[in-house]
Image 1 (cartoon, rainbow, N blue to C red):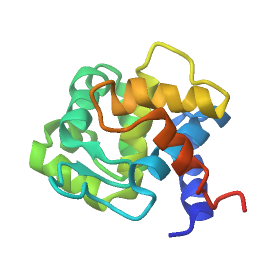
Image 2 (tube, one colour; image 1 turned 60 degrees about the horizontal axis):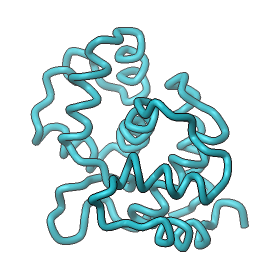
Image 3 (cartoon, helix red, strand yellow; image 1 turned 135 degrees about the horizontal axis):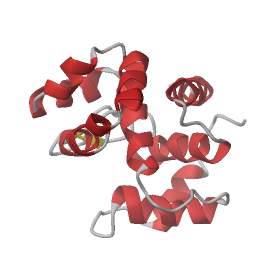
Amino acid sequence: MSHKQIRELVKHTLRRMGMWSQEAEELVFLTGMVESGYDYIYQIGSGIARSFWQGESATAKDCIDNYLAYRKKKLDKVCEVMHIDPDTLLEMSDEDLKHLLWGNIIAGIVFCRIKYWRVPKRIPIDLEGMARYWKAYYNTEGGAGTVSHFLEKADKRKDKK
């Protein structure tokens, strides 16, 4: 998988969503790097998490039901970006969302960004800050990932070489 191409897709998607910033682009790209290394599209073992960003259908459903459903302009924009009708997205079941995340790279980017967008703190500009932010708000305190894991994976990126 070309990290440069994934990075371009992240940037393009975030811009089309109207949710781009340099820090957001970096964090979303690195989240995929840390979560899957851009090698896996579902979680090894349980398979519960899908996409390069290892998003769970329950997280996507929460983003839809508790955020997008109340923001028609954002809902319309992200649906346009994912090439999905807004009513279809609003009615998706858990199984539908698993398939969407599994087979639609842009959906993985979209839901990763929305998860971070809903955090009431700014995205840090430094790598260590991003690692702590990822751990607290994406991987969560109970998750298996660590700040050092994030930093190790980030060091293996190939988008800037």
